[in-house]
Structures are given as structure tokens and as C-alpha cells.
Image (tube, rainbow, N blue to C red; front, side, top):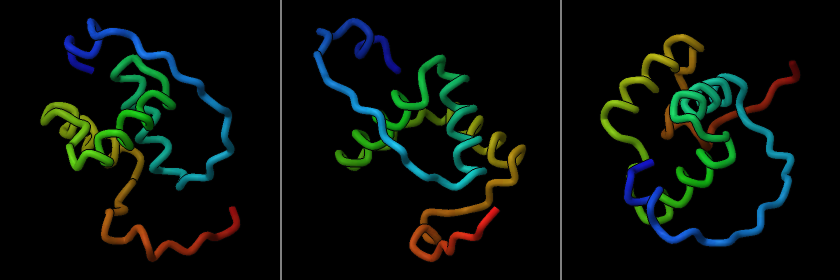
Length: 91
């Protein structure tokens, strides 16, 4: 999160609890990124989605390097191109 965002006027929002299912390794990477950025997983997901809606990248080059390391650590090899080909298996 940039300094501009931290000093900007606070916007009041209402959050709701949701039961989202997500691929296990992807979740591990997302949790690691959230921890690294000292934000909640929900805040990270909101930021990613809002950036995507504006066709902007949510991550700096440094964060992308860390994400690559987290992906290697957790064996997360999935790509965006594969996202519509997933078939869920029972654990």
C-alpha cells in the first residue's frame, strides 16, 4: 500500500463474511503476501480485485519477486491461462 493511500481520506464501507472456496496452494501464497504486507487476507483480495477492475497491476516489482518465491515454496505452478480448466478433486 502506498503512502498516498494511507494518508487519503478514509472511506466508510460495509464488509460481509463470505465462504469462498479457493485452491489450497494459491491460498497459501495469498496468506504469505498478506502477512508480508502486514494486511489482512481480505484487504489483500479487495486490493487485487479493485486493481484488476481498473486493468492495473496491484503489485510492485519487489512484491512480484517475493510472490515468485512464495509460489516456489508452496509448489504453486498454476497460471491465469489455466484458470478455466480446473477440475476440483476431493481431498
